[in-house]
Image 1: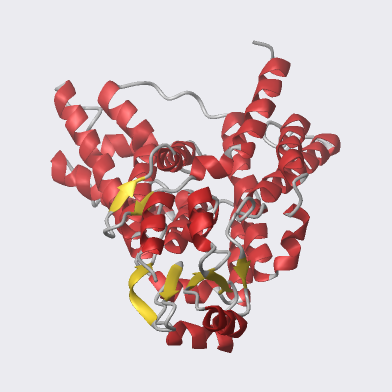
Image 2: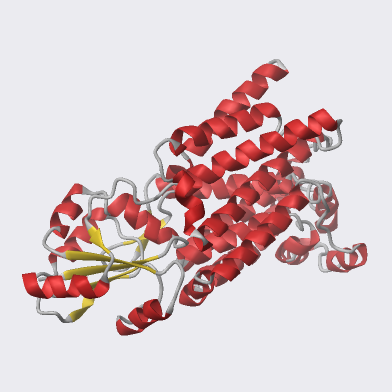
Length: 437
């Protein structure tokens, strides 16, 4: 296939991926009527697939890729006399890596309201945006993230022959062989922390680790040869850099919502994939910073278009298509409910809350839920940026994390049950609403 054809195909694939990105991220793990968690059909699989692919791409970055055969030599997988022993050592190594990442995912997702409170501070959000911009500059080649050689040698000594050494090497793989995971890992940990679902955090980071460990597994178990490093590695880093800059803009948009007004129109859904495709064609991925002035200029312009397109798509309002008629004035809503003898449904949400967006997209767009909501006064409380009034409402309604949906009966009493503290699919949510009188 000609290079031009490959470039066109890549641009079309990138545009399609960006257009369907929110649906691919999907719902992850969802709460059932009894509070149990299960994997949402289809959408959750897409989120896990993206995490796995992110892990694979991370393993191919220049500071990880060259260390793969070295690490395999340390654990002895390639020198094992038996193919089955080699497979066992490599599998143990990858599982050790997965256990380490899973623990990080559990810790981040268990942070709950504490993490949410931090994310409600616009200056913390600005700091996170700056961090992601610095990490993006690393992906674009401004500087390299790597451990000092002396520390790397000491960590290599953690390993050794046998399954114990392989497991130990896997547990410290994030420091020994994967310093480039920093930007991507930080993004994933931030995402699972905002989701607030520990099981989902464990599963997502476990799948990510399996992606990072795939080349290790293939080399150790099947003695495959690594392709030579080259410009394609810089392309992988450019993809990560674009994603990190877009995430930085999202944090700034959360801190200062006016920045997201450009993504409010339906036209953004058309311009977003078009911008990404144009950016890829100009050279956001395949061009190099080491070329002449014209090539560097085209790469910069391509990155700018790709970042803008990705930001527009991710910043598009999640509540588009909602059928529930919400009000935002707390005191007026309660007064109206008392006057009309109606129950109240209060949705505490924030723009940084992943599960809140899932409720907007998958639950409040359901016709039956909207019809049932007509007998309620439906109130949305925005906790994106906390102030004294928001904190007072959190204390009044015992809100421990977001999202939280509180129901008040038609007699004006706050109900302990039902209460929703995560994403619930429309049929289950409808049953909970029907319990309120």
